[in-house]
Amino acid sequence: MRCAAPDVSAWSVRDHLEHLYLSDRAVLLWVADALTRPDPGARADFPREIGVSLLARGSIPRGRGPAPEFTLPAGLEPADLRTGLEKLQAQTTDLASRMEALDACLHTLPHHVLGHFTPAEWLRFLHLHHRHHDAIIADILSARPSAASTA
Image (tube, rainbow, N blue to C red; front, side):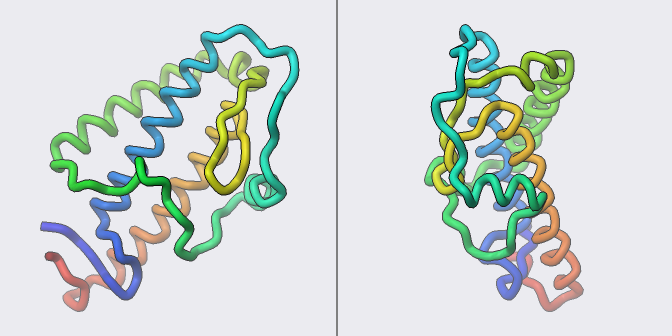
């Protein structure tokens, strides 16, 4: 059963969770790899103005921003999604012991809209991304008494 509220979001709660899983998995894989590479000595690329603004504001505005293809929900089974999220939680916990390296790392990876982020900026973005989707999920759930679809 999928909890949805089409007036709130075209995606169900599970879709939002799968999107977060897919985006986090890609970014955390890159962060772990970036921390193993030699320091470039200087940052080559930077966020766009909108990326700087978003990180400074501390929130992602509600709307229909374009999600990259690789982050679009494809219908993962709930058990697979849960297992994947648990693995990501363990990866994130492992990063806690590497905060100094994370803060110092100057490698960048581009966001398709916001520009290039360092590992530390990517983790900040992921936090804001989770809060953004958490608010949407809360709205779906609160719209649900029986008016929301469970199909």
